[in-house]
Length: 104
Image (tube, rainbow, N blue to C red; front, side, top):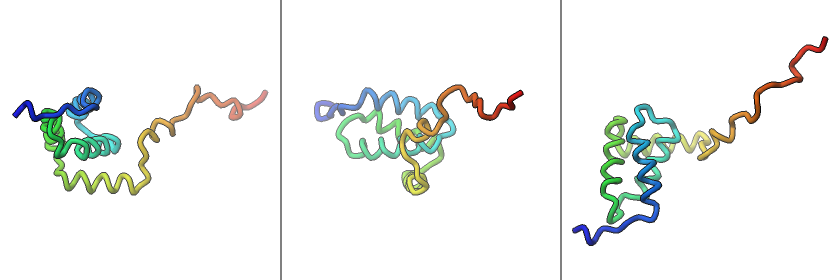
């Protein structure tokens, strides 16, 4: 029954993320963690059926079951993964280090 369906407050941003994940052929660790997070958010939620369907479709396209995803996510987190850390770890600046130059 459509009138019983709720609209999740994060639907719009999650829709964009699910669309990106659905288009991803080779997921990164961050992608796996994201889909795991979204599955936890929407599983059992009384609405956003299109998101729930697309999350399941994405897992199938990636060749993963829910149990396999959970196992991979546990391994990723155990290895020290932190959201956004891959961006923070990148070098800032031009990469030009004057200390490595020979002085004439």
